[in-house]
Image 1 (cartoon, rainbow, N blue to C red):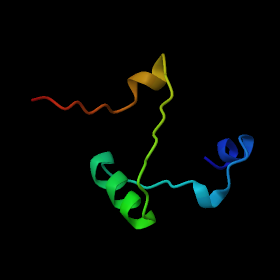
Image 2: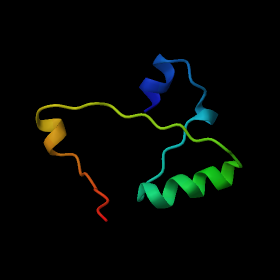
Image 3: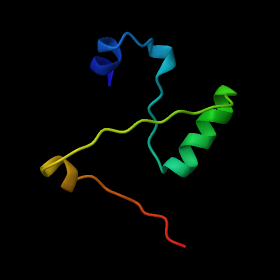
Length: 60
């Protein structure tokens, strides 16, 4: 994450990496930082890196 942050000129104070379920961690960090807007991004993967990723689906 450090290399990616440095590559794009993002300050360390502006990056947050936490372990846990997204539905638990994202609201907790947002509340801790007192933010009103959270923007998330993703990276498309193919091949072996895609097969080793864990995916969680919400079903009704």
